[in-house]
Amino acid sequence: MKSDSSSPELKSENSESASRGQEQNALLEQTVIRGQAIIEGIFDSFSDSEHEKLDDAELHEHDEDLDEIIGRRFSIYRCDALLGRGGMGRVYLARHSQLGRACALKVSSPTTAHGSQHLSQFVQQEGRIAAKLIHPHIVTIHAVGSERERFYIEMELVSGGSLKNRLRMEGAIPPIKALEWVTSIGSGLDYAHRHGILHRDIKPDNILLSDRGTVKLADFGLARRLDFPELPMSGQVVGTLPYLAPEVMQYGEHTAASDVYSLGVSLYQLLSGRLPYGGQTADEVIHHVLSGSAPSLREIRPEIPLNIAECVSMMMSRDPFSRPQDGTAAWHLLSSILGQLRDVDSLLREALGHDPDISWIRCGEKYRLTVQLPDGRQQKVFVESSSHRSDRQLLLIYSTCCPATPTFYESALRLNSDLSHGGLAIREIEGVPHFVMLDTYPRGTVDAEELRKSIQAVAQTADSVEQRLTDTDHN
Image 1 (cartoon, rainbow, N blue to C red):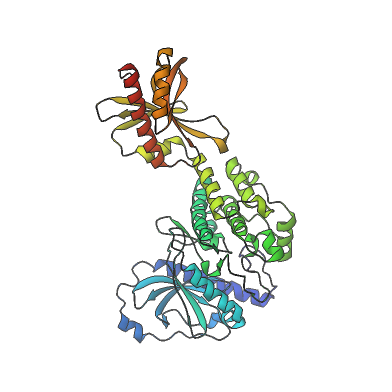
Image 2: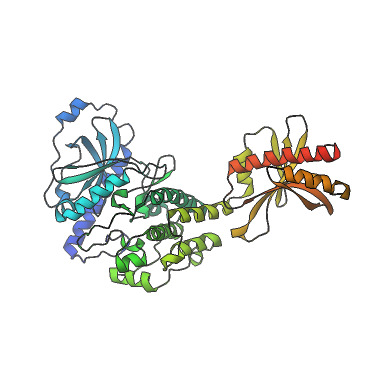
């Protein structure tokens, strides 16, 4: 079990080793900055012959701080800078000499490689499993291998840094942005769980930002197949203390629901800028997780919407059966909340922003759209949210056909039975009952393409009904 940089270490250190650690961290920060600065264009002039001229990396048998890897040859890679480090090794900015590909290369520490045969087997096996995951929000693993008793994992290079770094630089993240990021990671977790793979170490350190702002879940080297037994690891629990689910702390067994818990803690931290549970020692943190309550997000940041705070509470429930049970359920929940927070105007802009045949204006709480039809006719369509509570709210798309006079009832019923999209309903317009063509979608999950197609279908069908019942074009 690893400790987070903002949580207590699991083993006490004397003042001398603590001072040494501070010096190492300062050196690491400088190297990370250098590594990120030289990512762009670093490999353009490097050839295979130059790779052969490099000195071999010097690997220390017991202390990775004494390794000489940067600027040297490690297996088929040239390592140019240190990008980060974790409990099981360090990650280098590297180049694959045969493919000319920039990559992130994770090299195990000597204690990881030598300390446990089970651990070495575990990481290499799970690295190969995780390499099968190809998803836009998962960092791709290209290769797994070993070199002079150090195993390594070659990963896709994501150059924007981690969300932990973003938190360190900017503090708490705006609620909508944090929710967008975690929803994207939820889609990656959904993909992994559907392929039978647990992550087991989800945290902001392992969520990376690309230079285009896309988030990707990294460090699937600790992943495990759901149908594989957990390999013993010398009594250690895999994961990082503040993000571990209560049942993992108690019993050591990871499940899909424990991944969801870790994702919930990550969202809590992004929203609040702090971890939900603190303590001066690991035992205190564990005690708070198992028996305490996390401070209310809305007390820390009152501007956080209630449905986001409730979503985080659900994902962080102490009872695993009260959480979304896997990545699929978590992704659907997060997507639903995100959809509820997107205003109708932004949905319309995404759906219709480049359509010259549709214009719209806002009229109070609803939007009135004018749709130009192919035969020169036009139809008005209205879009508004229903009055249900937020988790049951619908998006209503409707268009007026004609007044609902009794002489039209039989014809309207016959037409309604033939409709393939939406349905005819009676709705009061300015106090007068009208036939309207109506379509609805759950407010939280409707996407722009669905909205665009629905608006066009409602407009065309309502115009057709109006024409057949009244032979006019008033709406």
